[in-house]
Image 1 (cartoon, one colour):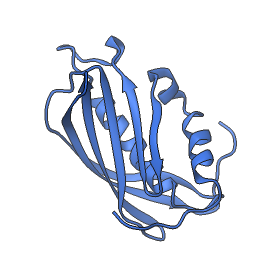
Image 2 (image 1 turned 180 degrees about the vertical axis):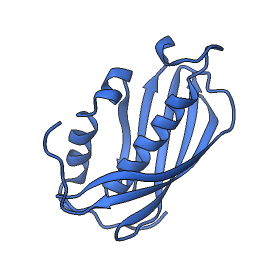
Image 3 (image 1 turned 135 degrees about the vertical axis):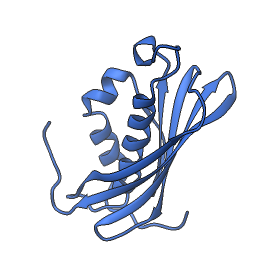
Image 4 (image 1 turned 120 degrees about the vertical axis):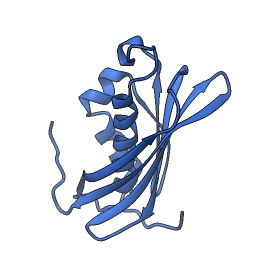
Length: 150
């Protein structure tokens, strides 16, 4: 989307925070590509994450989009900051059936307190990706409120 300024070792900070999340760990989610203002996460298919038709549950799709959106904004904030989601809207575009779910988020507008982030969610089988959801997120910067323990 544009050139963004980062602070300190933002990739290590993001990695440490991501892998402290019990939910992401319990689902088996892993970080993918990370760059200033953009983050990707990958979730392998697991029947425990499905709804009655065998697709990834819509709640899982929303969780992936939301989580990665927050981390995309987090890459651009100062080392002692944290983030929370203030608002989001997501459109589920197609059934999420695949071997992996991939969520990619990118900061659209960086603000001092509120930032707008777009998340696109795909499912992948073999080498084919299918776009299954798009969301728009408002992420709130919590200046000086880094959480150091769980």
